[in-house]
Image (cartoon, rainbow, N blue to C red; front, side, top):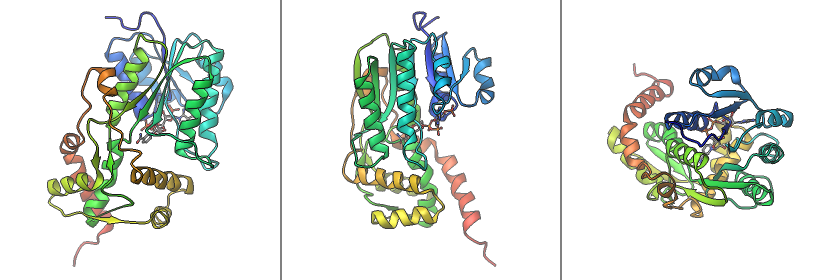
Amino acid sequence: MTVGNGRTLLVAGANGRLGRRVVELLRAGGTDQVVATTRSPERAADLLRGGVEVRYADFDVPDSLERAFTGVDRLLLISTGSDPTRRRRLARHRAVIEAAQRRGVAHVVYTSISSPRPTPEPSLYDDHWQTEQCLADSALDWTVLRNNLYADQFFDTLPVALVFGKLTTIAPAAPVGYVLRDDCARAAAAALSAETGGRRVLDITGGTAIDRQTIATVAGELCGREVAAVVTEPVVLRRNLLGLGLWEHVADALVDIELAVADGRHAVVSTDFEDLTGQRPRAVLDALHENLPTLLADCASLRRRTIPAGP
Ligand SMILES: NC(=O)c1ccc[n+]([C@@H]2O[C@H](COP(=O)([O-])OP(=O)(O)OC[C@H]3O[C@@H](n4cnc5c(N)ncnc54)[C@H](OP(=O)(O)O)[C@@H]3O)[C@@H](O)[C@H]2O)c1
C-alpha cells in the first residue's frame, strides 16, 4: 500500500531517538517518499537500506538546509537540545523555518513543549515559545505538537531513587501528564502524514496526570524497596546537579522543568493524541511494569558501582 498521496515527507533530525522512531512508523505505515535529514548520514545506512532517502542537514549550517529541503511537501522539525550559549536552539529552529519557506515546503510539524512561555532570558520554555511565534509569523501551514514530559526520561532517574531510597525533587506530589516518547513519535508521524493543512496546536500528553512520588512508590513495590520523597529547594537541586558534573545550561534547564512541574504547567492532559492517532496513549504505570527487567538491571549495575561490597 502506498500512503502519502505522492507527497514527500521529511524528518529533520532523524538520527535521534524520536526521529528514528518517526521514520520507522512512516515506513511501516506504507509512506513511500520519506526523506531523513541528519548531521551524520554515515550513521543512517540502515535507513537508506530501508528505502529512506537520507540527506545531510545541520541546523547550524543554513546552506545545508536549502539543499536538504528541496522537493519536500511536509517537514517535521524535531526540537534540538540547549547549548552553553543558550542562544543556538532558537537560531537553529528559525533557520529551519526560514529555509522551509524559501524551498516552498507547505507544512511544518514542530515538537514543542507543554505550556511554553516567554521568559526574560533564553530558556527551554522561551525557545519553544519563540519558535511557535516564528511559525505563527511565517507564511507556512503548521502543526505544533506540545509534547508533555517523556515518562521514559523520568524512568531513567528511578534507579538512583530506588538504590538510595530517596526521590529528591522540588515537587514530588505535583501531577504531570507524562507521555511515552514512542507515543510522541506516533503523534509526529500522524501529524506529518495527515492530509490536513491549516494551523493547529495539539497537546500531546498521557491519558491521566500522575505525580513522581506515586511512580517511585510503585517502582519501589515492584523492586521490593522503599522510596521516600524528599522535597528540595531549586538552589540546592541546581548545586547537586552541578556536583554530578552536569553543565550549567543543562542543570538550569532541569531546574526550570522542575519549577514548571511545581507550578502545575505540566499537569496538562488532553485527548489530542487520541484524536490525532485514533489510539489511546500508553499508560505510564503499564510502561513501568513492562520496563521492570531493565529497571532491575540498572539498579544492580548502579549498586555495584556505588556501594562497596562487604568484607
Ligand atoms: N518532552 C520531553 O520530556 C523531552 C525530553 C527530552 C528531549 N526533548 C526534546 O525532544 C527532542 C527529541 O528527543 P530525543 O529523545 O529524540 O532526543 P535525542 O535522541 O537527543 O535527539 C536529538 C535530536 O536533535 C537533532 N539535532 C541536534 N542538533 C542538531 C543540529 N544542529 N542540526 C540538526 N539536528 C540537530 C538530532 O539530529 P541528528 O543527530 O540526526 O542530526 C536529533 O534528532 C530533543 O532534541 C529535545 O528537544 C523533549
